[in-house]
Image (tube, rainbow, N blue to C red; front, side, top):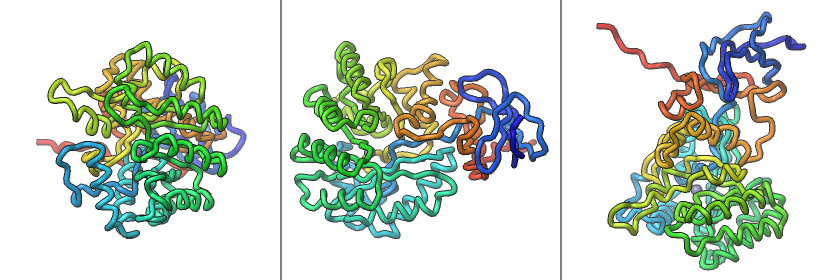
Length: 411
Ligand SMILES: [Zn+2]
């Protein structure tokens, strides 16, 4: 029995990796008890056997440049075109515009059960700190519904865009905890990587890089990132996103690299929607998928997440900010089919994603913040395979959203 009075009990919930049903006692915004049956004088919210997760974790989402397809054109669907089209649209961004689009996407994510977000915000001499300020304000407005961590990054390069490093420095000096990168957009990718590591060390920041987003296995930069991670002793605090070139490696080379990533403490985020859209453009038929599989990485001990990346822009002209849909897309592309493989896909938008971001106190366990999302499914595999709907959420003990089930009318 819990030692303190409970504010409410979430009753009859299923939990990831455990059999049967549990009652979850909440007191002062925290989980006070998780037991088979809690008897206490507190209001009971019946989960009716639904699977409860500690909120979905979005490790990679661009809120500043979402929802701009109405102002962009896609002719080739390549990375180069996406960067150019977005740069052109960005020149017209205003704080109000960024805030409105970021709000719409963040609210959709919340309604789909996301409770933690790492959002990448672009800095360059054109946009300055406008995106950072606007997204920070949106995050503050929604702080009771979702925890937002901002990652500032130089989408258009550092060494080819003088002034960018000073902006990164200014953002980090303000207390931004994470710095990103896009080495493939710089005239000097290695110097780009070196600068980001140097800044991360100076400001004691986490690193989350866009990396090796290309077709074929030639010219990968992951070796340099491993070297810099060791040199700057940043193991456990570096994530690389995309890594589409991994999907072009023969299995033996892939396995060796997975072991090196695990040993160096580098996490990997897979962004299936963007990678499927941008990769394979050089093929005329039998188009390669260009999505890295997490299977070999996970087997080697690498922390892996699946994330949304872009929503309705030239990098990904689709999107609803649903992480369960993204887990389903990843499962489909990478042919995850067994109950364990499908459950692992849910793990990559929950516990493993929390591991990628080094989130403390994540999980449905006594002492942790009472963050709960009810998924309309009995088993983990079913969530991913059948796109289970999130029904309701609780953050720090308070209700955050409610998504009613469909009602069909009788004859
Ligand atoms: Zn990205």
